[in-house]
Amino acid sequence: MEWAQLVYSKDTQVNISSEFSIIKKYLSGIGTSYLNTNGIDLSIGDDCAVLAKNSRLLISTDTSVVGLHFLKSMSSDAIAYRSVAIALSDIAAMGGQPVAFNLSLVMPNFNSEWMKGFRKGLQKISREFKLPLIGGDLVKGPLQISVTVLGIPGKNILLRSGAQDGDILCLSDALGFGYLGLRAFKRNSLLNSKTKPYLFPKAQISYGLAISNIASSAIDISDGLFQDLSHLILGSGVGCNLDLAKVPIADKKYPKQCLEFGDDYQILYTVSPNKLKTLQANLKSIRKKCHTIGVMSGKNLKINNNNLGFLKNWDHFK
Ligand code: ADP
Ligand code: MG
Image (cartoon, rainbow, N blue to C red; front, top):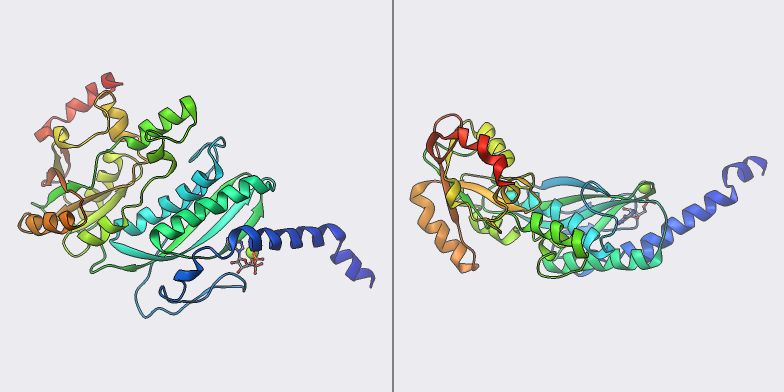
């Protein structure tokens, strides 16, 4: 009896029961209608979820930390949505279809209004991509959200290493809306058409699926064009001649920031020139475009043919 009292102190009991009631009330039942079709046998409630998949799986985790990847002043529905969208972007870049996600939530205290908003954000993205939340963890600490997404490959798995000499470098859409969105949010912290791309970024899942059997390589742009393009170049072992004037940006007043800030989650990819027409037709059917911004060639990154010195003047655009 004495040891039992020691182990099961009142505090511990309170913690355990509140953790369970938070999970039950705010984190359960999200996307349950997609469990069957997505091949999930068992979701939240036991030690593990169970997947019945007879296929290869794509798995990726992304962690969002307060003050680093999002601001404390952001509404909790945006914080939740954004954390999942960022993780989904990796599935998009591999040309996959997401089937479920896990979510580890670390938060300093419990606030029912905040949790309600958080649930709302999870439900929004769950509905949008038809995917259930199948498990996770709940821990006390500085606010941070870690999301693991599971996906099944599209017709082909797009790697960073597949670009070939002569391939065309393409971009799914303009860069810089994330930068402009954060900038606008810092000024007025409202949800409007300017701040929305930062608060609720769109994972390019349908785009990734549409190019999955045609593109030769792909990566999502989370850290800015040059950073992620260099991953593609290093991964594939082929250089690139980037035509900077062709890169669509959100605001010509801030070219450097639009290109380098990141947080856009567009897809950067390559395609063989003889497949470009088919690719464009595929994208047209989902009302998307392919922006051709360069050619893979040589061993290094060249900008506007060889003018890397151009970058020295780059800061003047600030
Ligand atoms: P364990 O102690 O066995 O790891 P937990 O008590 O942490 O289990 O969680 C109980 C159940 O609730 C598990 O099925 C777990 O996946 C789920 N769960 C915990 N935290 C979350 C969360 N943040 N989001 C979704 N499900 C969660
Ligand atoms: Mg646990």
